[in-house]
Length: 383
Ligand code: SF4
Image 1 (cartoon, rainbow, N blue to C red):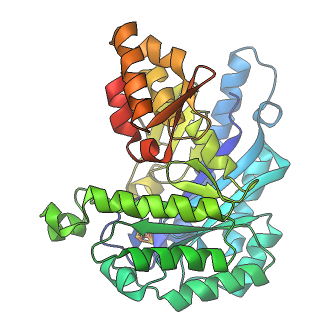
Image 2: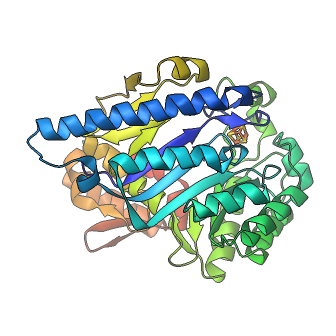
Image 3: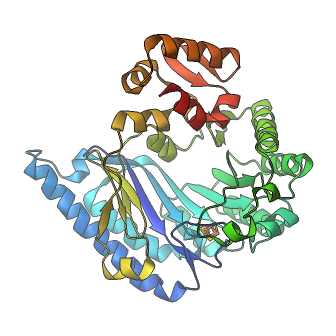
């Protein structure tokens, strides 16, 4: 195993947002103790099994030697609801099996309204050096439409507390293409993120997921902003952030140079990674597996795993993930997986390039902003 990243899932939230289909639950904080017992058990038993696997394959090394961990991402849910003492236990368990690189990027997700000075100081002492804030918007009306229970002031307060704790590397997560949003509201949110000196901005179009309250509310797609309007908002985002020296390094992610999320880049490069916690997905030994997405079942059986569609073609998956990044993806790989003839591919690439969706450089396909917005459609055409 050569993975360099670890994902830890924390499933507790103050309330459940009506668009959310993540493994997260509200009003379950009484299970935090039991959850962390299960999490530590999972880390211990799986890492012992991974060590045994390595030895079994004649690799006379433990995980510690195989995997200097360079990124850890504590996601959720709302990890900022949990006190640093719990994470201290997680880190000391991980350190039994892994060597954590001195420059390891360690991210923790925080939701406005849950930022506490004492917790943030504790996180910092543990080595957490990056915070990802679920801001979603700097407009009260949009927060209300999204069913978020925090206010704009909560977000501003969270940013101040994070900075006071000495953490200057922080991401702001936004959702655009929300019913009722205007270009003015959206650009105001982007400019406020710049004003607060976010080092990283992630922006996702609202997706109405099945089995969420939003599925009922927005049964009629006409209630949602049109694709054209969503593209206008995306284009505004790309332009403003470029003008302000942000690198557009992935479809939905922008960073000041040097602040790109190493953890997420590893994911889009289709690299392998460890993962622990309910609903967590991992990629190890060419296999993608996921844990049980149910809090109580996970607590009872933390080691249960599902294999995720092992029919997925690894090359196709690599193209799909790589195409999201600004570094481009290999034309040769496309030629290996496509059902189209060489002539058809050449024509398609020419057409897409003339229409401004991509550029071909050194045998690599680079999607433009326009192309990134519809990257899946482009892949469907090419393969
Ligand atoms: S805070 Fe995040 S994880 Fe929790 S319910 Fe809302 S969207 Fe889902």
